[in-house]
Amino acid sequence: MNILITGGNGQVGFELQRQFAIFGNILAPTRQELDLTNAQAVDAYLGEHQPALILNAAAYTAVDKAESEPAQAKRLNAELPAQLAEYAAENGIPLVHYSTDYVYPGDGETPWQEDSPTAPHSVYGQTKLEGDQAVTQSGCQHLIFRTSWVYAARGNNFMKTMLRLGRERESLNIVNDQIGAPTPARLIAQATALAFTTHNSRFTTHHSPLTIHIPSGIYHLAPRGETSWHVFACEIFEQARKAGETLAIKPQGAAGIPTAEYPTPAQRPLNSRMNLSKLEAALGVTLPTWQSQLGLTLKEYFENI
Image 1 (spheres, one colour):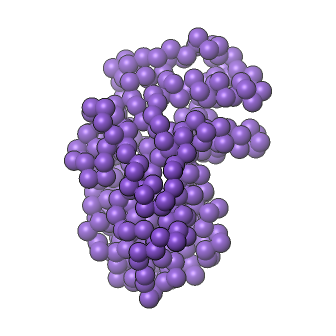
Image 2: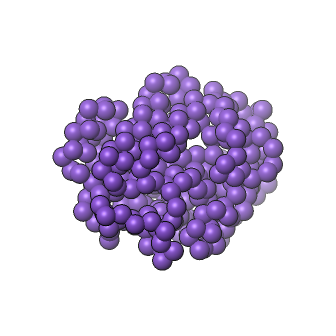
Image 3: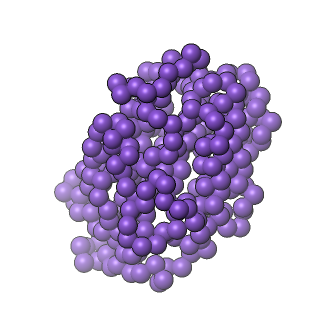
C-alpha cells in the first residue's frame, strides 16, 4: 500500500516518514519529483500511484511573505488540500491535513476550542482556514490537526535560531506577549500514528486497511502548558547549558519585549492557546508538557551535530 506524504522533506513530513514506515510504502516526492503548485501534475501523480492514505504536510508557511504572495499561499494552503480531499472522497481513502492556530482571532486569554469562531488576520491564516473548510466539506474520512509553534531537531525553526544566536550574541530581545505551546514535529507525527493504531475504533472502511480510529474532524495538537516566545527562548538556553552547550548569552541577556516593538508584515496572534481535551479523549492519552518535549528535541539535536 502506498502512503503519500506531501511536504515529506519538511519538519513534520520527515517525522511522518519515520512513524508511518511500518504501515506501508512511503511516497514522499521532492519538489523536483512533484510540483505541488501544479494541479495537473498532482492529479497525474495521484492517478499513477493511487495512495491508500494521504498525509498532507505541505504548506506555504512563510507567514510574512504570504502577504505579498497571496496566490502562491492560496494554492498550497487552500487549493491543494481541496484537491487531495476530493481525490480521497472519490477513492474512499483517509486524508490527514495539518493546520494552525492562525485561523483563530488571536485575542483574549481563553484557550481556543475546535469549534471556536475563526477570524484570521493574515493571508497565511486565511488560506489555511480555506484549506480546513475544503477538507471538512469534501465528505472524505479526514483528520485536521491544528497545531502551533512547530519546531524540530532539523530544518529551520525558532529553537535552532535561538541556539545559533545564543552562541553569537550576549543579548537578545524576544517577544513576550504572544502565548502558545511550542510543538515538536515528532509529537505531531506520533499523535497522527496513534490515531491509526488506537483500539478505540469508531470507523471502518472496505477500501483500505489504513483506517482512522477516531471520529473525522478537527483536533488541536500541541503539548500541554503555555509559554511566551521569551520564556521559550530562556528555557532553550537553560536546557542547552545543562546539556553542556557553551553559549555567549547570559541568563540576564534575554530581554522580553512586546509585539508592538517587533513589527512584521503579517499580524501575529497574541493568544495561541488551544484546548487539547478533544484529542486527549479521542486517543485516550495525556499529552506531554512542552518543557519535556523541548528536552527530547534538544537531546536529538545535540546528538546529531
